[in-house]
Image 1 (spheres, rainbow, N blue to C red):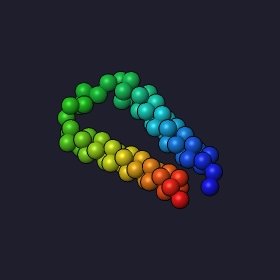
Image 2 (cartoon, rainbow, N blue to C red; image 1 turned 60 degrees about the horizontal axis):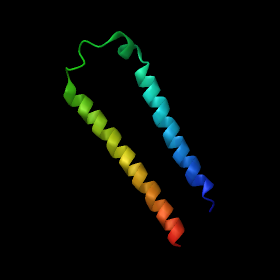
Image 3 (cartoon, one colour; image 1 turned 90 degrees about the horizontal axis):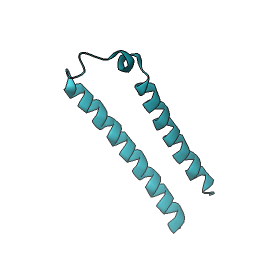
Length: 72
């Protein structure tokens, strides 16, 4: 298997993160300002934690795949 696939997967993950960050930054709520930002913080923490868990799991899976490929 060619290492190009790993670079493609890594690049896709980076691009998705970049696009999501830009979309959030330019969202209407962020431009106008949200007076209720500090309310309902529990739900925000749950979402943020879920994003971190998914990101870390994807990173670990990519690492395991990379190590398995190069140790065979």
